[in-house]
Amino acid sequence: MTTRRNFIKNSGLLLAGSVLPVSLIELSFAKTSDNFTFAYISDSHIQQIKGNKFVRNWDRGLIRAVAETNMMDPKPDFVMYGGDIAQLGKKAELDHGLEILSGLRVPETHYVMGEHDYYLDLGEYWESQLGPQYYSFDHKGVHFVVLNSILVDEGWTNKWASGEERMGVMAGLDDPRGSPFMVGEKQRKWLADDLEKVNKDTPLVVFSHSPLQKLFKNWNFWTEDAEQVQAILKPFKTVSVMYGHVHQIQYNQIDNISFNSVMATAWPWPYPKTYVQAPNMMPKLTVDMNRADPFFERDATGWQMIDVNSGRLSVDFFLPENEKRRVAFNAAKGHPEDVVYATNTTAAQKHY
Amino acid sequence: MNIFIVWKRLLLACLVTTGLMISPAYADNFTKEDVDGWYQEYLSVVDKGRVAFTDASLGTNGVVCAQCHPNGANTHPETYPKFQKQLGSVVQMWEMVNWCIRNPLEGVDLSPTDPRMTAILSYIAHERRGVKMEPGKH
Ligand SMILES: [Fe+2]
Ligand SMILES: [Fe+2]
Image (cartoon, rainbow over all chains, first blue to last red; front, side, top):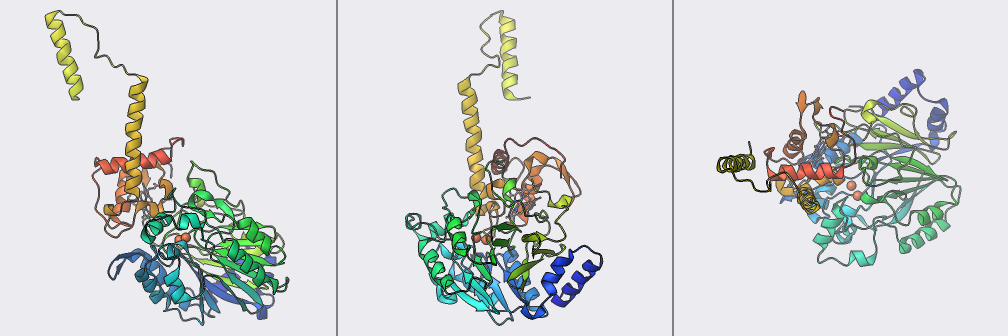
């Protein structure tokens, strides 16, 4: 098992082989006093079969992420959970997922709402266990904001005969009866008020479940009011958005905002370009992850450790039986970059 | 030999032996209505395939195909038959469908001629329409 210390040592070895641009190393390790790390686990989709029986495959993904996070040395300052703990928002699923997550030996875990946690009871049980659906906190000079970005309009929300029916429709990623996600006016107002008090030089990190960009509407890799949210973040010098939901590696830069997605612990999703009947607006910057091997059930799933240096993020992806990947902000280029795959893609990365 | 051909041959034999000549209504002729009707038949099976993609009764754990293959994506019907490295031989697509039924869905193989298998293969092909054939591609 690779510990954090080993991992840093390995990165050093890579450097010796002159694979990494020097600027990146300076960025990551210059002022170590400012550095801290946090872990990011997302999209476990704990799925109840019946009674106390749950889908083994999804359980294993979350159990593995928790175990590996606990082995990190030094320990992450906190853990972010990126949403979709449950598959159908059931109390039993949320309870089972939270029980596995309670094995985390870290000072604190913060949660983001996913649509699979929300649409059965509009987040009532989740909120009773985990607190408000949107909030902010400060840590070592960085301002963190958590948004519930998976809301849709009231007409859609209220048109179903039951919560089960509504959840069932929203749980189908490609179900044409779904509706595009948004942050919504009320929360945008809250966000603007929250940020009003924050110095514009303070590094800002925003967590959401959906991408806060418009990437692919068919699968809700989409936030309907993305431009309006981006405009609220505009006055800040250093802004990063991290999101779950997409079950794949994506990264992007829009003006002052860096975007990083995280992996699911449950299962990977195809890249939108593999669905040839609909156009997409996926970021050109992203170098795709490897295609999944269906014969290894943890393939193309994973979790991540994030190095924060002066508010810039370097995301290390922990991918079972795959080479680790690192997507880090490149200060010279002004956008996130995969330092190893920046210039070459392998045959296994060709998605079609 | 299919029944229709047998019947046509019998009819032909009849005509020849009786020396009767009637208009050749048995010739393979069809209209636009026929073609449209047949395409509708196909689309109705595609619809059944979509239903199968979200049907937990194919397996035993509640997991469905569409959870991992939205719009049937990442199934690459245009590449079959092909060498599947994990199976060690050249296979047809229904064998990979059954692999996914047995593993992520913890279910039991469908026969390759099961109408539900035909529906699944039809839906997968339909969502991939327009992509050129590339048998053997990995
Ligand atoms: Fe998810
Ligand atoms: Fe989601």
